[in-house]
Length: 226
Length: 120
Image 1: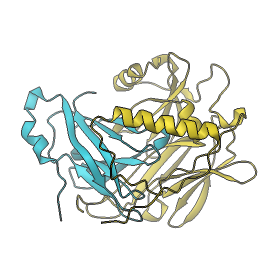
Image 2 (image 1 turned 90 degrees about the horizontal axis):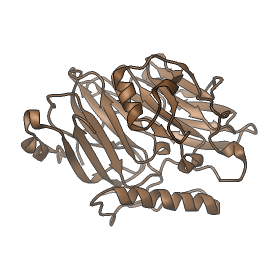
Image 3 (image 1 turned 180 degrees about the vertical axis):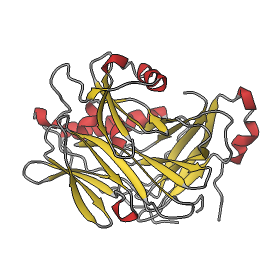
């Protein structure tokens, strides 16, 4: 059995702590029957950005703008959007990876920006930005895969960046590469070899300070064992 | 090796009456420094599926895992930035033979709820 580790969490501002507590409390509330005793907070993957009153640390675009270009929507995407109260007419394509993984965006009835990932195989739900989202400088959708019993040999990701993000890099087993932000502050990355499979993604501000790092891939599909 | 397959779920699945249920609810083991653990549905549903993954700690990513008919595999990490209750819809029924929820590196265990159904 693994030794339990205490959380290694960065410093939070008062608002950040409050959001964190509220977020976790809300999550705990919706997980029916969750017995929390014995759960070890791990090192986690989050590197939360400190909150401030600066608008740049909030997810904003120009009023009324949905980042992306118009895209033809399937019935599945329309149903998915409807469930999140996202107007189908507002759905845009913010970024697309070379393997077809697409970042969709749209606005819900409250005016919040919502995003979803769509690949040729799988469609994710629309997620709408909230105060919780301000804790993150980038938001990602990704996937990776491999042959039977083998290591990951392909993968891709799409994401979007907060206004204070100047640069986004992808770390692989072969090094680190920058990925360009498009006019919507969205980005994509595709790997077709094992060494290029993304392990993590980091966002930096204009001064080169790391704002947020998200872990992406493991190296293999773990077998159901313990 | 202790299989975590949710075989009990298969016993209550009833063909055309299948609507959806939580096929795993419990502490899903993981590792602090390497590897990952996955709980699989254990059978192939007879209809396109939704997989929902809901877990207790929102500062930790969880993954959805798919096994294709050729036994190659695909993992969709669920970014914690979007919260800790996420749903995925299978676009191509017939492409996959199994589905699962995965606890990746970084957390020794997490309370996880893994749902499969023909709809939300």
